[in-house]
Amino acid sequence: MLSEGDPFAYNPFDAAYDRDPYPTYERMRREHPVYFWPAANAFLLSRHEDVNRALLDPRMSTSFLEWDFLRPRMALIQGTSAHRLLASALLNLSPADHARIRKLTNPVFTPRSVERLRSVVQHEVDALLSGVGTGDTFDIVSGLAEPFPRRALELLLGIPRERTGELQQFGTAVSDLLFPWLSDAEFAEHIACIERNVRFFEALIEERRKAPGDDLLSALVCTEDLGEKLSLDELLAFIAALVTGGMETTIHALCFAVYDLLRHPDQAKLLRDDPSLFKNAFDETLRFNNFGKLGVLRFPTEDMEIQGVTIGKGQCVYAMLGSALRDPDAFPNPDVFDIRRDQSKNLTFGLGPRYCVGAAVARLEAQVALTTLLTRFPNMRLASEPVFQVLHPFMRKMSSLPVKVHG
Image (cartoon, rainbow, N blue to C red; front, side, top):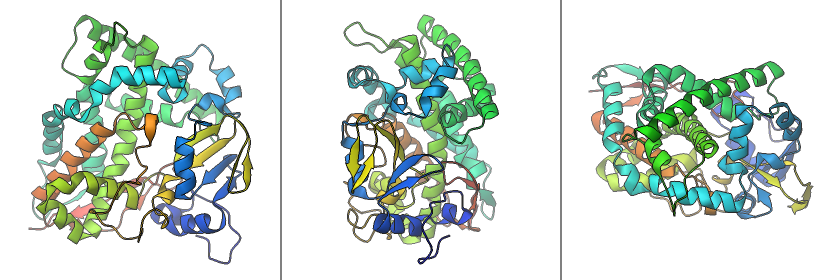
């Protein structure tokens, strides 16, 4: 980790950054609010005001198709399933097409619609925790956070459980496909994995068209507005987004939520005593210790100036949520974990038309998992500090989080 007097060089691959990136964020906000990171050929925004503006500015596109770096790779994947997914991904659609698809899919993901899935989610959490007893030490990562979102997603989409490993690989392939440091061999492996999974989901979608079930995939296949339905490519792209957002991000959100609640037992007790605080408490865990290393991507559609720095059309901009959510100009006493804090400036799930479509599912899964843990094991404590997976490109990813269940 850099000392205060050292020349600044951003390095998210430093093990110290995984454990505690906040000194780096503080220095970036103070000295380099718009920082050019040569390793990714990208600009990093670290202040809340700039991140907030980037999320709302219509000149800041979410579309990877605006990215200069991607154009050569897009030429390589013409005619592949990966190209189909990218072309129809919500992030890459025009505002009009994005609004059309959100209008079709939003009814499936309202809090009321998602609530009917609670029993399924609860059953999976209960099954995973059934063998844990007083005096046991178990790993939150391998024992709950990793298997739970995968199992829940399989059930919610009606995917056979034997495809668990393939589903996880699909999520990784889609989320990692466009990272600049991906080797040619890794890129080719991801393209092949996407091809296999698209063929599987095409067959599954056809099955649901013929015989809809009581699952999210059937609801998406059948959703209709004024006679209009999602096309096959739009369905495939939406499923890919659910897999990436519903697995990796949920895994890390759960790990950090457990970690910070156990580090602050007074706050955990508040939540146990008053479950109505859950929504605010979950948002605070996402604010206080955000698992993302870089944040969300934006691509200017014209030359822009931010904090005196010119960013050219088509260049890559990372709006660093982890830093923005600890900015004292937006959150008083930002380094204090307070589940009753005002969350009106929390940007974790996005803003405006691009607000995360799966937010209600993420909240439901987190609520069931965390409240079950806290009520079933009220004296649970950290057994040791977490172990981080070093060199993960864009996540502060825990590989182990041991806890002790006391009597």
